[in-house]
Length: 101
Image (cartoon, rainbow, N blue to C red; front, side):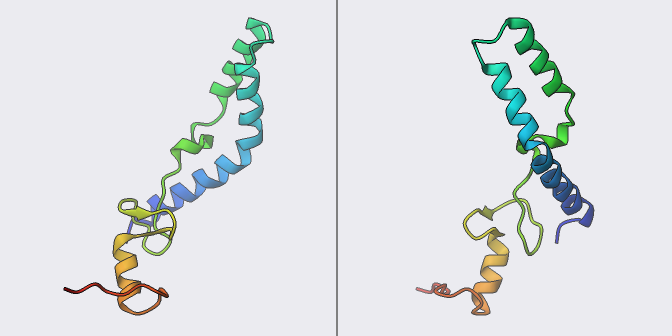
């Protein structure tokens, strides 16, 4: 189980990322728009830099929904390999069979 503080920090980042997403997209579009004057594009980049760091989507870490583990994460299932194995062994994931040879 991951530390509660790490999980909560990541949840805060998710919320902040969603909150600032429209503003970030607007400023980013202005900064990359070649038709605008250089001063306006520079101003948009400066405003983008003033936004909180944790509002950037790249700072959100994929974590297991069950254990909070950040590594060995399956995106499709939104869980780690360890949780997947545990749930599969208990028969909680349909179609998943423990392999043996």
